[in-house]
Image: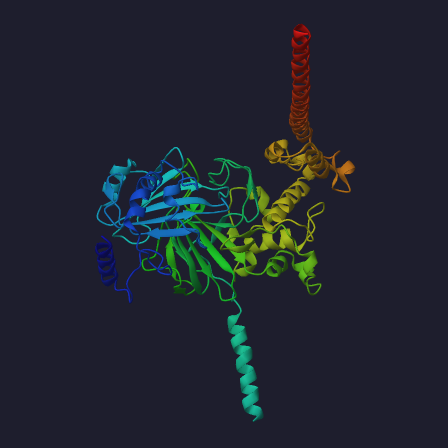
Length: 162
Length: 379
């Protein structure tokens, strides 16, 4: 799956005529291979967070090995085996959690193989809307990084709000 | 030889000058600000399109994009330090300028293709599209599409210099005088009014034209009004508050002065004016009675002018504090009751232990008496 994502990204980069491969995620962070057992234990909690059903807290022990202390409060993951959110295959996951609770949380699923309309339908987001509210925050959909991947983001607002 | 030294010196001066940040260009083509820096916002739908239902200070400039996904441009050269979803800020890009300051672009609908952390950016380069990600919890898509632009200075001194130019001109700062409450935000630095860092001034159209002559019709004019000279009754520049708080406080005073009244008369209870420092009610669960008394005393009487200030707060604030006092009284009563419980439990234990000895003595006496009875009956 990771190879597929990288291949897709390389294709996008070529098409766009960029001089370097387009990193979908933060290239400054080294990519870590996730242990399969760790992933399998964490996947249900991660799926619940990405579907905006559950807020990630330190009490969720299964996620601790994946969310180790990080200066940027941001974690990027490539699922080591097929992983779905709302039944859609997820190619990468980005988690942001502000330790100070000022800015809140963002849980992003990156989906390469589905269209925006397909992701909207699966996440039950109306065609005219940018997102929908959930019990814990807001679920937004878009293509912020590149036109060939859809990002589904669950946002839990922090104390700071515009 | 002299020429070589001179050239070397000039080169050093030139490279030092290069490292200094130049003034910034506009992040949007429209070049209009729809949300002032530091303006106190009451929250809600009537508040410049803000989705925030809570009163808050505005910690940046809102650049209008006429509620469209208009392109957003880099205001200066720099390096990307953050790109991606960032909670309440939505899709965010942060760029570090040559001098270390950070400029942040919030609520973007999308990023220009190919951008990533560590990449160098040129002034005027398109970074993405303005949007309304995230509008805040439970209000997806309800906020107007715009650019929320935040400036974070790397140096605390710089914030003070920009915020209070009249003090800056007096000479070097005494570090002990630096405001301690300036808000240093993680990854951003010391947030301050972006206006003085821009090359140009930008017209402010925030839907309150009656305030334009008072607070300024453009960004640099507001900066000059709120930070250049303190309005009568306003917050002086040696305050312990952050820039947005000073700007908000001085905005209210300037508006009141222009209306021929005072901030005290103009502001309502709903503005939060006159409230007393908040009591840490939650912390009372674990405090001893003496700690509670100390906390309450510190909260009310640590200010040397407490007896004067208490007469100025609103009746609502006094009622709130009265209710709080009842709450604290309940905590104190509970803590005293629990202490009594503990003392009584200890007394019960003491009595029980003492009774154990007495019971043993009684049993021994009874046994002795029985033995004596048996001995007497045999005799």
